[in-house]
Structures are given as structure tokens and as C-alpha cells.
Image (tube, rainbow, N blue to C red):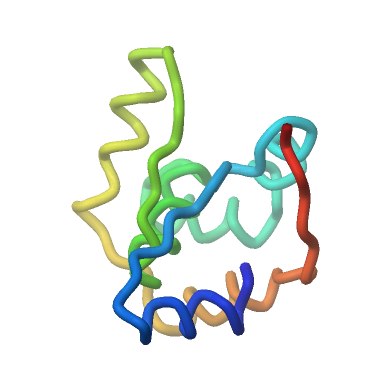
Length: 104
């Protein structure tokens, strides 16, 4: 989540983009099956992927999830018809593990 870096960069007026916002290779299954994210998704009638993308969006982070699957593309763009509560934003932020991964 880079909780120190993201606000610092944003305060400099620089846009922050999430790379692999849905977990990336080897971590997607774990992230998309998280119990808290699943609960929040059910509450909003959305998928876990949509909740994650919305969370980033509400933090002012640019998300460009890659997909060649038309169904996933439609799902990924359908995040503008709901909003996470402040409590939900805090709960999701608490999932931070302070991990960094290189994907290449």
C-alpha cells in the first residue's frame, strides 16, 4: 500500500498508479479470496476485484487493470456506481502487510 510514499507523491502533485492492483502473478488468488474483501463486496453487490479497484480510486490512485477478457474488462470499469464507506476504507487499509514485490 506504500502508506507513506503514496500521500507524499500525491502532495507533490504527481499521480500515483497502482501496478498490479489485483495482486499480480502468484498473489491474485490470495487477495481475491480475502474474507474481509469478500464481505465488503457482498454488501455492495460487487466483486472483490471491484472493491479493490474502488478502494484505490477513492485513495486517489490511478488503476489500470490489464485484461484481455471482455467480461473482466466490463467488471473492472463498473466501479463508479458505488462508494466505500470511511469504515470500509479503514478496514481495507488495515490489511496492509508492508510487502513489496517485483513482478518482472
